[in-house]
Length: 111
Image: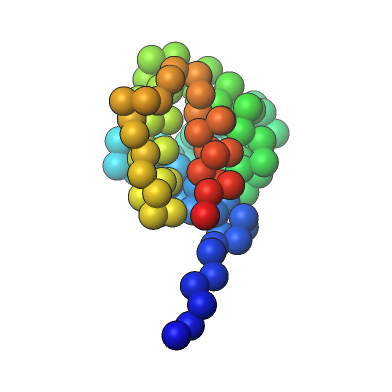
């Protein structure tokens, strides 16, 4: 029987970025997603591939672009998709406002 090898951090980071892409596309549109990535680069000097290592800046940019309440909805959706990609459970009822970074870090360390 083959040994199951857990995903590496890079695979998990890719899963996070894919979850962000998917969330923006579903909740907004592909053009809004691309506009947001342009905003990240121009206003925050944050490239799409840097998001996993600069989560604080991503959250700050998302809140600036959408406002506090909408950004929380977006972050919960990202976490739901991210955890599903990793095969772990995300309990949105236990999610505490402002804990996006901690939830992502915990998911990255899982399995």
